[in-house]
Image (cartoon, rainbow, N blue to C red; front, side, top):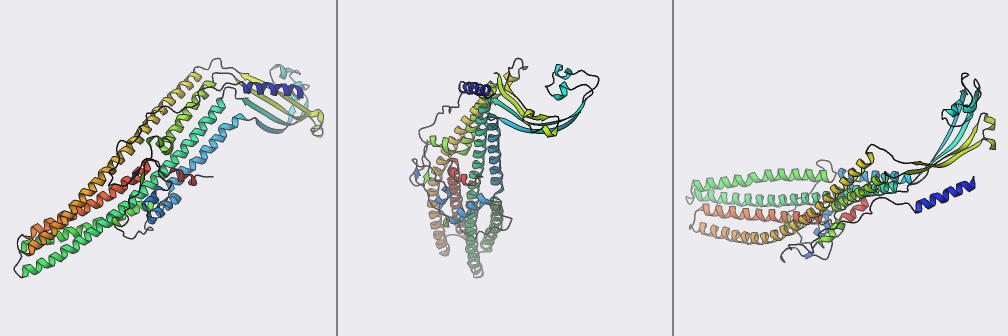
Length: 492
């Protein structure tokens, strides 16, 4: 037996070495990658470093401990991130399941049977009908006996054509796609937290402007009332001032509503119950910084952005499944065996005479499958074509997002410069209008118009500052910055 088994193992080893894995090994498709970005922010904007990639914790470039704390809390408590990480374990289990086919499958069986052979039959009839040899097959008609059986079953499919190995490759790629999807969700969460935080600070500054405007207008109302009583101003001047006081006062509750709603959104993002997050009022200008923006080269996006890596992983899986589908056209060879102890008497069950075994190869050759194998291959090839187009589209979309945001940051910088000039001119206009009004050279309507223009200019600067910070957060996200840090949130 040992000589036969040795020869069988040598044959198996030889066939395994000379086996041909079906399908082509994956090669990254050729992509037209631009040498650089079409637009760069102007020198007045935040500095650009085209030779650097975003840092792992890129949000720390804003130098805001409060924002960093909120992002850390969101990464630990946000339920969407936890849900996204859970399938990673499922993907790893799928790899193990796909790999299991490469190894022998061994089962242990044990049974007891009490058998009664029909009197209206012949000895050996069971063997003639195709049943496996055994005591019950050759038993005397009408006899009754016990059968004690203990056996080890072996089945090992030899993966000559790489069907199982291609399946393992596809499962590994699918698991990688799941992991990158989880990282993309976490990266989006970080961006959402940053944008929500800056939105709250924008509202804080708008509230400050509104309250300051209300105080100034109330002060002017008192002055107008005094001038009306002295006969130096008309009731129309007072009515117009009262309208503006009411207008300024009406902004405050609406802004407070917007802040509360945005705070509720931030609480959900950070996994906090409603009303538990307390952010003291801080105007946007008190947290503004000018971080360096390391954009790197366009080609580096292929290695950084989770959505691109996820799309490429699905492409790798689709390529592997083409080879898996091709392997079904070839014969499958397996080694099956059984060995154990079998006895009609319990007392003799464990004796050497009860030993029996069978082992040998079996081959299955597909002759006619009704087009199943061809359909399986067509599906796999079609799936690969779809994933290839999706991969290329994802890359183009990534390039567009980065280029758009760089242009936007450039425009925001120039816009802020013009708006600051406008605000300075508006301040001068208010001062001059107030002086000329006290000198009796203009009516109060000119003062009110100058104040309204100055308020609008201040508000526009706040809106543009927040939009610029939001664009920075979006750019870091578009560059794939920070995705390496998400590895610490993966299950071990």
